[in-house]
Length: 496
Image 1 (cartoon, helix red, strand yellow):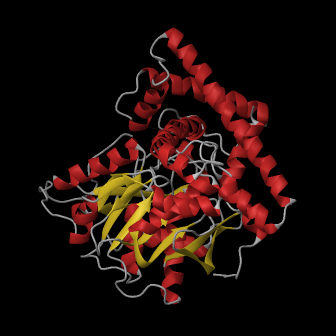
Image 2: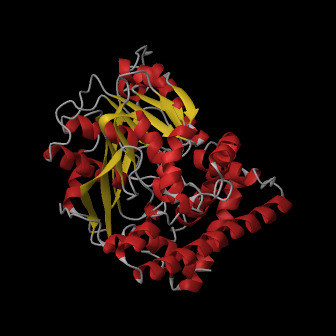
Image 3: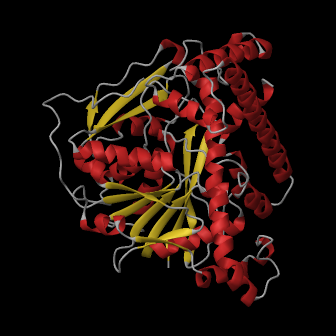
């Protein structure tokens, strides 16, 4: 794994998979089931998480205090929002509580726009509501060109609207219907179906427009010097909806970075007892492949525990993971898994991997072992033929490990937890999160993260942002290769 003393300009090529699929968008103008393990019926589990985890589960949540935000304002005067720009200290102190509350509401509203994005990719890729082939970047040429692909998309839309009218027990279809109903549309009536079609078309048009703007911004960055280009890339999605998609790729990147941290002596044996994942996400219909033949799931909290234990950075008996997310759907999903765990039911992770992509052998090796330190191999759901060539593994996470993951509702830009003395996090992971905010919001987020980390604690993020509020950005970082066309960078920050 290569390391460089500074961030290279070719970082602008990161996230290739998203660009490929978004390009396709622009050019084309299951059921839930019980634990898959064998054995006797589930036995109720009454087991607290580790003492550190219990303390963090009860930690108070509060907005960032103005005293902690002031150094950020001094450093980023040119990036302040209009309500705060040019104000004296007394004026800022007067408007600060209202500004924080209103900005919190505005950021949380972006979750709904992210849900709409997910619905578009569900339409393009989903196999749970139709046996028609997904329209992906890889198979679109085989459909007979753009016009034929567009016809296929309209046929898929017909099938999706059929499913929305009678959603049944499919969790994804139920969610898709809820997104449509939030607009006051009832897809069960002829008039509502027509309105739902128009609404989905509007969402798609927005996604295409945002992709075009993204491409234009990338071209502009290529003409700038390295520092300006990097700053632009780091905030590229600041106006987009907050999507909750995730995949095994991010988990692989985090393990690679943790391995480098251990090799470099930054983290040692048993260094992590309390860890947090900012924006753990849900594997609903991501922007690369959108697999949906298995139940909705969250991957990163369990994958992080698995990696920490495998690398000797944490003990299996004394590790608590806290998830920090502002999405009610994500938090409710994890809380539901905890309720089932208390009744003795494990959590089944499905780990799909495209069998056509020429993946980095290290990624394939990670995929083959992921979960082996925290769970056991299970029978995976067989993907439908329409999903293409896929390799799938399933791992059942035991109830005790599920209970060690505690969800907390938190907007990382404006909120923090106040852990008891000596109970701060040892490590925090925030992948594909900070890129959705502007420079000022990123700096506030780092201030909140710093407040929750112990001195010497580590933040891992794939977004390079100027360190503030006691956070130091390491000169080294981890370069992660997924395949010849996909790579990422994990940056190391240390709490001073």
